[in-house]
Length: 154
Image (cartoon, rainbow, N blue to C red; front, top):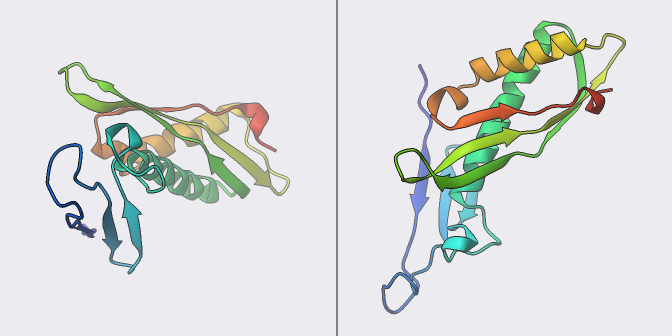
């Protein structure tokens, strides 16, 4: 078992406090000492120059899948030179009629190095294993799809 901490800090910057006027900017500070400026999504009156919780959620899923995939590939002795991903989260009403990120699609592009390259079956298996073992994906009820292309690997 391990514990993971994040500290959130927000302070009112507006004279009054109404839905239209209060600021959405806040700070996330992690145990590493890194502080990130965050805000609501611009659709919810946030600052588009800052990370919003929905983007952070998609990034956490993408990061967890990548880190798990790298571990799976390394254990199979594949060499990965580069991994990039463009994740997309869909915010909409769920079956309970509540706003939620109902679906996240990850689109990893992986560049393999060395002489050993995975077959299409091996690549699919590695993604399946990475998804099943991803701590974040196992923690949410959001549907997560891994949409990769065999043409995107070298």
